[in-house]
Length: 242
Image (cartoon, rainbow, N blue to C red; front, top):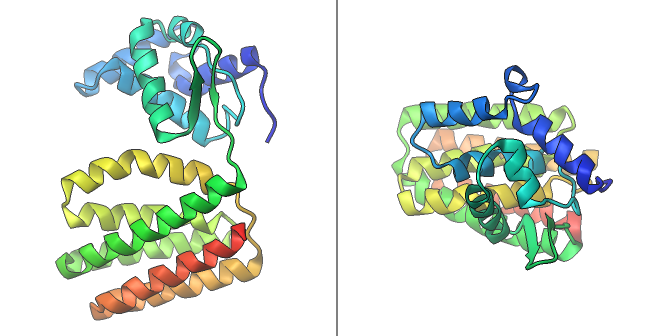
């Protein structure tokens, strides 16, 4: 993935961060909208914009981010920008060297492998916790999400990313507030770290089979089979990083 020069990365970030109706130098409008719709801090609004630019590739691995320039472009003080960047650094998608640089981190083979290990362990634990709590309506919604993930995989999208909304929904249905809060940030790193994995047709076919198995287990209310399907799915992903 190409690395943008610092100036180009900042320009791309500004364009990605601002809705089309707010472009043309009116960056404050976008942040004002955040204030009006929710009691979120400015740092949350900055966080979301930088996060989205990283996830969609606007800010590629290695791209430099200068907090002063970013604050000026977004018409906020440096404090919310620094808070947002510190949060992204804790997640691991940004790396900071004091007085030297702040840049988007690179995804190494080791990082991808470790991320897969974590994603698999989380997914199986989440499904195990959620299954005994599901109502018929919950199972219908999960089945709908499985169908969407299957379509995404068939269309050639990254299977490891296409299945993430499914596990986020399983997590929500546990009603475990602590886990849901922790996953909000972890999911950003999982999606970013695994989106680049090269998948072939055989891998996508095998993942679709595990989704079918999970759907069938949901219909039966079979928690053990559901967990087994999720575990098998993530073992398939493990093959992508050796």
